[in-house]
Image: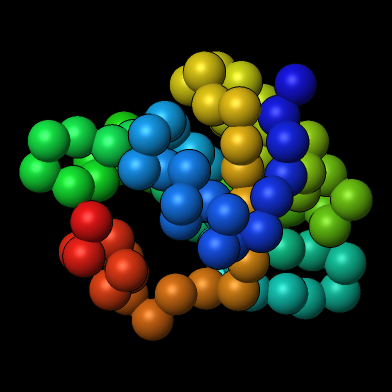
Length: 95
């Protein structure tokens, strides 16, 4: 079971365990395109374990898709939010 949390909570939790960050890249007519990043802590900061550019996904299926990715990577937490200006985002560089 994956718990969806706020982006701020995810930024705190990823210091100690893997977390899924799903960025909404595009919204059109009931569809969402995502960039899904599975991040985990490492000695040098954060490490991206997996990245998935989903392409268009039905809006009602977004949480199910993110949940499947999180479960496959052993993540207990995920967050979905608007796209970052760049990846990794500035806050990840500071960890």
